[in-house]
Amino acid sequence: MTSKHSGMDDPRGVEKDDSGLNLQEKFLKGVQFYLQKKWENALKEFLSADTSNLNTDEKMELSYYLGLCYTKLNHYEQALTFLEQVVTSGNDILRIFQCRMTLAYIYVITKREKMAEYELKRLQSSGFESPLLYNTLAYAAWMQKQNKTAIDFYEKTLEIDTENATAMNSMGYILADSGIDVMRALRLCRRAVDFKPQNAAYLDSLGWAYFKSGELIEARTWLRRALDLAPDEKEIQRHFRIVTGEAL
Image 1 (cartoon, rainbow, N blue to C red):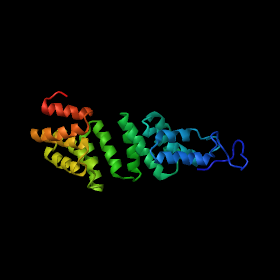
Image 2: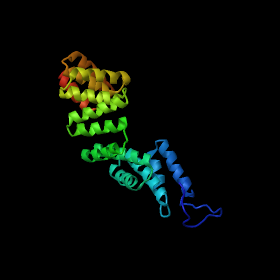
Image 3: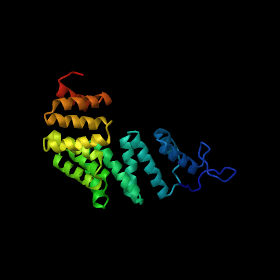
Image 4: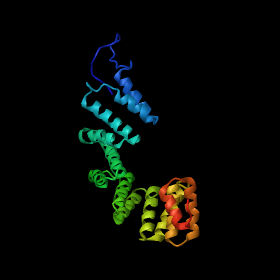
């Protein structure tokens, strides 16, 4: 990231900000913090950069990183502002794709499923297809209680990636919970657990599928494992109480 001349030059002719770093060095420091997953440090560097003389591409690059940092820190409303700038004014196709996916994620998390669906379908209509895209579309549909649509999207994920554990687990849970196809739900949930045996959500889904199939001993076993791994998860607690009748 480069910057045009502004302010006073130091004796070597390098533009400086208040901390003594030139703007390019400051931006690169922010990127380095971001890659190290030090989101707060990265955000501090990006926010302290003087943007008054940046060109359009540089401003889009800064907005991109600010949007991602705010997302990582769960400051979703601030993130939306910068991500939308990239989507509407940027010209880097891959970054626009990533920002649309991030926007959709934020909209799902903040229970704005219709807006999430809009962003995802814009991506789909542009020819971008990926397991992440279809998994997010499926989740948005499920949040709106559109089980059949959600299953269809998870099917598309598995057409692209036959070993996608997220799609297996999520579709298995929907099939079991809704009673659409409990036997297939069990197969999918078992496969997901085979891929990630320490994932509490997957263990919970498998236990719930066993419960829906009437196999209470197996249900109790798998839900107990899930609860041991994630004792504070409300949904796992709820399932365990339903299956065992035990208070936690």
